[in-house]
Image 1 (tube, helix red, strand yellow):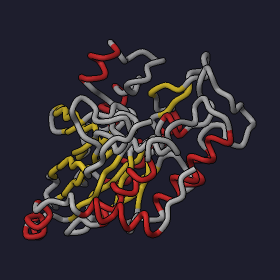
Image 2 (tube, one colour):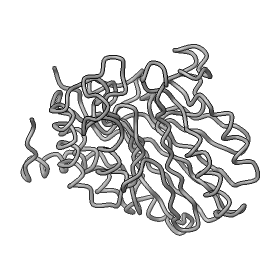
Image 3 (cartoon, one colour):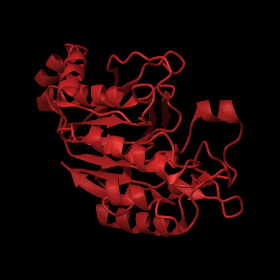
Image 4 (cartoon, helix red, strand yellow):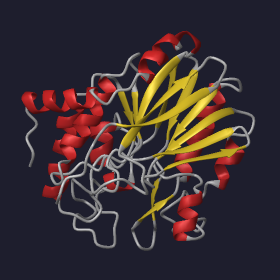
Length: 311
Protein backbone atom coordinates (compact mmCIF):
# COMPACT_ATOMS: atom_id res chain seq x y z
CA UNK A 1 0.00 0.00 0.00
CA UNK A 2 1.27 3.45 -0.88
CA UNK A 3 2.04 5.90 1.93
CA UNK A 4 1.43 9.53 1.08
CA UNK A 5 3.87 11.74 2.97
CA UNK A 6 3.81 15.51 3.31
CA UNK A 7 6.99 15.70 1.23
CA UNK A 8 5.59 13.56 -1.59
CA UNK A 9 2.33 15.52 -1.66
CA UNK A 10 4.25 18.81 -1.80
CA UNK A 11 6.20 17.50 -4.79
CA UNK A 12 3.01 16.37 -6.52
CA UNK A 13 1.32 19.70 -5.77
CA UNK A 14 4.22 21.63 -7.29
CA UNK A 15 4.02 19.54 -10.46
CA UNK A 16 0.28 20.01 -10.69
CA UNK A 17 0.45 23.75 -10.11
CA UNK A 18 2.80 24.02 -13.09
CA UNK A 19 -0.01 22.72 -15.32
CA UNK A 20 -2.47 25.47 -14.36
CA UNK A 21 -2.87 27.69 -17.40
CA UNK A 22 -3.47 31.39 -17.88
CA UNK A 23 -7.15 30.55 -18.34
CA UNK A 24 -7.50 30.91 -14.57
CA UNK A 25 -6.18 34.46 -14.68
CA UNK A 26 -8.73 35.33 -17.34
CA UNK A 27 -11.43 33.53 -15.38
CA UNK A 28 -10.69 35.69 -12.36
CA UNK A 29 -11.38 38.83 -14.40
CA UNK A 30 -14.70 37.34 -15.56
CA UNK A 31 -15.74 36.27 -12.06
CA UNK A 32 -18.25 39.08 -11.73
CA UNK A 33 -20.41 37.54 -14.47
CA UNK A 34 -20.44 34.09 -12.83
CA UNK A 35 -22.42 33.35 -9.70
CA UNK A 36 -19.97 30.62 -8.71
CA UNK A 37 -17.79 27.83 -10.05
CA UNK A 38 -17.24 24.24 -8.96
CA UNK A 39 -14.86 21.46 -9.97
CA UNK A 40 -16.05 18.09 -11.21
CA UNK A 41 -13.94 14.95 -11.16
CA UNK A 42 -15.05 11.40 -11.83
CA UNK A 43 -13.77 7.83 -12.05
CA UNK A 44 -10.50 8.12 -10.13
CA UNK A 45 -10.45 4.34 -9.49
CA UNK A 46 -7.93 4.67 -6.67
CA UNK A 47 -5.82 1.57 -6.09
CA UNK A 48 -2.35 0.70 -4.77
CA UNK A 49 -1.01 -0.02 -8.25
CA UNK A 50 0.23 2.25 -11.10
CA UNK A 51 0.74 5.27 -8.84
CA UNK A 52 -3.01 5.89 -8.70
CA UNK A 53 -2.85 7.67 -5.34
CA UNK A 54 -0.09 9.94 -6.64
CA UNK A 55 -2.23 10.72 -9.69
CA UNK A 56 -5.26 11.50 -7.56
CA UNK A 57 -3.18 13.77 -5.35
CA UNK A 58 -1.85 15.55 -8.41
CA UNK A 59 -5.42 16.15 -9.59
CA UNK A 60 -6.43 17.40 -6.13
CA UNK A 61 -3.41 19.72 -6.05
CA UNK A 62 -4.42 21.16 -9.43
CA UNK A 63 -7.94 21.84 -8.12
CA UNK A 64 -6.59 23.39 -4.91
CA UNK A 65 -4.46 25.74 -7.04
CA UNK A 66 -7.32 27.06 -9.20
CA UNK A 67 -7.83 30.82 -9.23
CA UNK A 68 -10.49 31.88 -8.59
CA UNK A 69 -11.03 28.95 -6.26
CA UNK A 70 -14.14 26.82 -6.84
CA UNK A 71 -16.79 26.83 -4.13
CA UNK A 72 -16.88 23.03 -3.91
CA UNK A 73 -16.12 19.77 -5.71
CA UNK A 74 -18.48 17.17 -7.15
CA UNK A 75 -17.26 13.63 -7.75
CA UNK A 76 -19.05 11.29 -10.12
CA UNK A 77 -18.39 7.87 -8.65
CA UNK A 78 -15.98 4.95 -8.90
CA UNK A 79 -13.78 6.42 -6.20
CA UNK A 80 -12.07 3.06 -5.79
CA UNK A 81 -10.80 0.70 -8.46
CA UNK A 82 -13.27 -2.04 -7.61
CA UNK A 83 -15.36 -3.56 -4.82
CA UNK A 84 -17.58 -5.70 -7.02
CA UNK A 85 -15.61 -8.92 -7.12
CA UNK A 86 -12.69 -8.61 -4.68
CA UNK A 87 -12.29 -9.58 -1.04
CA UNK A 88 -12.84 -7.46 2.06
CA UNK A 89 -9.13 -6.78 2.64
CA UNK A 90 -8.72 -5.37 -0.86
CA UNK A 91 -11.87 -3.26 -0.52
CA UNK A 92 -10.70 -1.75 2.77
CA UNK A 93 -7.20 -1.09 1.41
CA UNK A 94 -8.64 0.92 -1.47
CA UNK A 95 -10.95 2.97 0.77
CA UNK A 96 -8.02 3.81 3.07
CA UNK A 97 -6.17 5.20 0.05
CA UNK A 98 -9.22 7.29 -0.89
CA UNK A 99 -9.33 8.65 2.67
CA UNK A 100 -5.66 9.62 2.52
CA UNK A 101 -6.05 11.37 -0.82
CA UNK A 102 -9.12 13.42 0.12
CA UNK A 103 -7.41 14.69 3.27
CA UNK A 104 -5.48 16.97 0.89
CA UNK A 105 -8.57 18.49 -0.76
CA UNK A 106 -9.08 22.02 0.57
CA UNK A 107 -12.69 22.35 -0.64
CA UNK A 108 -16.03 20.83 0.42
CA UNK A 109 -16.91 17.77 -1.67
CA UNK A 110 -20.16 16.03 -2.61
CA UNK A 111 -19.96 12.49 -3.94
CA UNK A 112 -22.07 10.24 -6.18
CA UNK A 113 -21.78 6.48 -5.88
CA UNK A 114 -20.36 4.45 -8.78
CA UNK A 115 -20.80 0.79 -9.59
CA UNK A 116 -17.22 -0.03 -8.55
CA UNK A 117 -17.91 1.50 -5.11
CA UNK A 118 -20.50 -1.23 -4.36
CA UNK A 119 -19.30 -4.36 -2.58
CA UNK A 120 -20.16 -7.74 -4.06
CA UNK A 121 -22.79 -6.88 -6.67
CA UNK A 122 -21.22 -9.21 -9.21
CA UNK A 123 -21.58 -12.77 -10.47
CA UNK A 124 -17.97 -13.21 -9.32
CA UNK A 125 -18.49 -11.63 -5.89
CA UNK A 126 -16.36 -12.71 -2.96
CA UNK A 127 -18.02 -10.65 -0.23
CA UNK A 128 -21.59 -11.83 0.30
CA UNK A 129 -24.88 -10.47 1.67
CA UNK A 130 -24.51 -10.05 5.42
CA UNK A 131 -20.79 -9.19 5.20
CA UNK A 132 -19.85 -5.73 6.48
CA UNK A 133 -18.32 -4.77 3.13
CA UNK A 134 -21.26 -5.91 1.00
CA UNK A 135 -23.44 -3.43 -0.85
CA UNK A 136 -23.46 0.35 -0.50
CA UNK A 137 -23.07 0.91 3.24
CA UNK A 138 -19.30 1.50 3.14
CA UNK A 139 -19.73 4.29 0.59
CA UNK A 140 -22.75 5.87 2.29
CA UNK A 141 -21.06 5.93 5.69
CA UNK A 142 -17.75 7.22 4.36
CA UNK A 143 -18.64 9.58 1.54
CA UNK A 144 -22.43 9.79 1.18
CA UNK A 145 -23.29 11.53 4.45
CA UNK A 146 -25.18 8.38 5.43
CA UNK A 147 -27.05 8.08 2.11
CA UNK A 148 -26.42 7.26 -1.54
CA UNK A 149 -28.61 10.06 -2.95
CA UNK A 150 -29.48 13.54 -1.73
CA UNK A 151 -29.77 17.18 -2.82
CA UNK A 152 -28.49 20.59 -1.77
CA UNK A 153 -28.80 24.23 -2.81
CA UNK A 154 -25.99 26.62 -3.67
CA UNK A 155 -26.17 30.26 -4.81
CA UNK A 156 -29.60 29.93 -6.34
CA UNK A 157 -28.97 26.58 -8.04
CA UNK A 158 -30.31 23.17 -6.94
CA UNK A 159 -28.04 20.10 -7.07
CA UNK A 160 -29.42 16.55 -7.12
CA UNK A 161 -27.07 13.63 -6.50
CA UNK A 162 -28.56 10.37 -7.76
CA UNK A 163 -27.75 6.75 -7.02
CA UNK A 164 -27.91 5.15 -10.47
CA UNK A 165 -26.60 1.74 -9.37
CA UNK A 166 -29.40 -0.81 -9.25
CA UNK A 167 -29.16 -4.55 -8.69
CA UNK A 168 -30.48 -7.15 -11.09
CA UNK A 169 -32.95 -9.26 -9.07
CA UNK A 170 -31.97 -12.45 -10.90
CA UNK A 171 -28.20 -12.25 -11.43
CA UNK A 172 -27.53 -10.01 -8.38
CA UNK A 173 -25.14 -8.09 -10.63
CA UNK A 174 -25.29 -4.29 -10.85
CA UNK A 175 -27.28 -2.49 -13.53
CA UNK A 176 -28.03 1.10 -14.47
CA UNK A 177 -31.30 1.75 -12.66
CA UNK A 178 -32.96 4.14 -10.22
CA UNK A 179 -35.39 2.37 -7.90
CA UNK A 180 -38.97 3.36 -7.12
CA UNK A 181 -38.14 4.68 -3.64
CA UNK A 182 -35.60 7.10 -5.08
CA UNK A 183 -37.96 8.16 -7.86
CA UNK A 184 -40.60 9.03 -5.24
CA UNK A 185 -38.00 11.01 -3.29
CA UNK A 186 -36.94 12.83 -6.46
CA UNK A 187 -40.54 13.79 -7.27
CA UNK A 188 -40.99 15.25 -3.78
CA UNK A 189 -37.61 17.00 -3.94
CA UNK A 190 -38.53 18.70 -7.21
CA UNK A 191 -41.88 19.86 -5.83
CA UNK A 192 -40.08 21.75 -3.05
CA UNK A 193 -37.48 23.19 -5.46
CA UNK A 194 -39.74 25.39 -7.51
CA UNK A 195 -40.21 25.80 -11.24
CA UNK A 196 -37.72 28.63 -11.80
CA UNK A 197 -34.63 27.28 -10.01
CA UNK A 198 -31.83 26.03 -12.33
CA UNK A 199 -30.98 22.39 -11.59
CA UNK A 200 -27.85 20.24 -11.94
CA UNK A 201 -28.18 16.45 -11.71
CA UNK A 202 -25.17 14.27 -10.86
CA UNK A 203 -25.28 10.57 -11.73
CA UNK A 204 -22.53 8.02 -12.23
CA UNK A 205 -24.20 6.06 -15.02
CA UNK A 206 -25.41 8.33 -17.85
CA UNK A 207 -28.98 8.83 -18.97
CA UNK A 208 -27.85 8.89 -22.60
CA UNK A 209 -24.60 8.26 -24.46
CA UNK A 210 -23.90 7.90 -28.16
CA UNK A 211 -20.57 6.29 -27.27
CA UNK A 212 -22.11 3.64 -25.01
CA UNK A 213 -24.71 2.75 -27.60
CA UNK A 214 -22.04 2.52 -30.29
CA UNK A 215 -19.86 0.32 -28.08
CA UNK A 216 -22.49 -1.87 -26.43
CA UNK A 217 -25.55 -1.67 -28.65
CA UNK A 218 -29.07 -0.87 -27.32
CA UNK A 219 -28.90 0.01 -23.63
CA UNK A 220 -32.55 0.35 -22.64
CA UNK A 221 -33.07 -3.16 -21.32
CA UNK A 222 -33.58 -3.69 -17.56
CA UNK A 223 -30.17 -5.39 -17.23
CA UNK A 224 -28.22 -2.66 -19.05
CA UNK A 225 -24.97 -1.56 -17.41
CA UNK A 226 -23.84 1.25 -19.71
CA UNK A 227 -26.88 3.51 -19.33
CA UNK A 228 -29.73 4.01 -16.86
CA UNK A 229 -32.32 1.49 -18.00
CA UNK A 230 -35.35 3.49 -16.85
CA UNK A 231 -34.08 6.87 -18.03
CA UNK A 232 -37.35 7.55 -19.85
CA UNK A 233 -39.07 8.17 -16.49
CA UNK A 234 -36.82 11.12 -15.71
CA UNK A 235 -37.81 13.18 -18.72
CA UNK A 236 -41.39 13.16 -17.46
CA UNK A 237 -40.40 13.99 -13.88
CA UNK A 238 -38.42 17.06 -14.98
CA UNK A 239 -41.10 18.45 -17.30
CA UNK A 240 -41.76 22.03 -16.25
CA UNK A 241 -38.58 22.33 -14.18
CA UNK A 242 -35.36 24.16 -15.09
CA UNK A 243 -33.02 21.19 -15.51
CA UNK A 244 -29.91 22.67 -17.11
CA UNK A 245 -27.12 20.15 -16.74
CA UNK A 246 -26.74 16.40 -16.16
CA UNK A 247 -23.21 15.33 -15.20
CA UNK A 248 -22.13 11.70 -15.36
CA UNK A 249 -19.10 9.45 -15.46
CA UNK A 250 -18.77 5.71 -16.10
CA UNK A 251 -17.59 5.89 -19.72
CA UNK A 252 -14.20 7.60 -19.08
CA UNK A 253 -14.82 9.86 -22.08
CA UNK A 254 -15.81 13.49 -22.56
CA UNK A 255 -19.14 13.52 -24.35
CA UNK A 256 -21.65 16.34 -24.64
CA UNK A 257 -25.23 15.76 -25.76
CA UNK A 258 -27.78 18.55 -26.08
CA UNK A 259 -31.39 17.41 -25.74
CA UNK A 260 -33.62 20.44 -25.99
CA UNK A 261 -32.65 22.78 -23.16
CA UNK A 262 -30.79 20.09 -21.18
CA UNK A 263 -27.05 19.44 -21.57
CA UNK A 264 -25.76 15.94 -20.72
CA UNK A 265 -22.00 15.74 -20.14
CA UNK A 266 -19.79 12.75 -19.36
CA UNK A 267 -16.80 14.18 -17.56
CA UNK A 268 -13.86 12.07 -18.72
CA UNK A 269 -11.87 10.36 -15.97
CA UNK A 270 -9.20 11.25 -13.44
CA UNK A 271 -7.77 7.77 -14.06
CA UNK A 272 -7.97 7.80 -17.85
CA UNK A 273 -7.97 4.16 -18.92
CA UNK A 274 -7.71 2.91 -15.31
CA UNK A 275 -4.30 4.58 -14.94
CA UNK A 276 -2.98 2.93 -18.11
CA UNK A 277 -3.07 6.09 -20.22
CA UNK A 278 -5.51 8.38 -22.07
CA UNK A 279 -8.87 7.18 -23.37
CA UNK A 280 -9.14 7.66 -27.16
CA UNK A 281 -6.66 10.51 -26.92
CA UNK A 282 -8.48 12.25 -24.06
CA UNK A 283 -6.02 12.82 -21.20
CA UNK A 284 -6.61 12.19 -17.53
CA UNK A 285 -8.47 15.21 -16.20
CA UNK A 286 -11.16 17.05 -14.31
CA UNK A 287 -13.62 19.80 -15.18
CA UNK A 288 -14.34 23.35 -14.07
CA UNK A 289 -17.95 24.52 -14.38
CA UNK A 290 -19.08 28.11 -13.95
CA UNK A 291 -22.77 28.72 -13.20
CA UNK A 292 -24.38 32.11 -13.67
CA UNK A 293 -27.44 33.63 -12.08
CA UNK A 294 -29.35 33.51 -15.37
CA UNK A 295 -29.19 29.70 -15.46
CA UNK A 296 -26.39 29.46 -18.03
CA UNK A 297 -23.04 27.74 -17.47
CA UNK A 298 -19.63 27.06 -19.01
CA UNK A 299 -17.87 23.68 -18.99
CA UNK A 300 -14.11 23.27 -19.32
CA UNK A 301 -12.30 19.91 -19.22
CA UNK A 302 -8.68 20.18 -18.11
CA UNK A 303 -5.75 17.79 -18.08
CA UNK A 304 -3.66 17.91 -14.93
CA UNK A 305 -0.41 16.60 -16.39
CA UNK A 306 -0.41 12.93 -15.36
CA UNK A 307 1.80 10.48 -17.23
CA UNK A 308 0.93 6.78 -17.02
CA UNK A 309 3.40 4.54 -15.24
CA UNK A 310 4.43 1.01 -16.09
CA UNK A 311 2.58 -1.75 -14.27
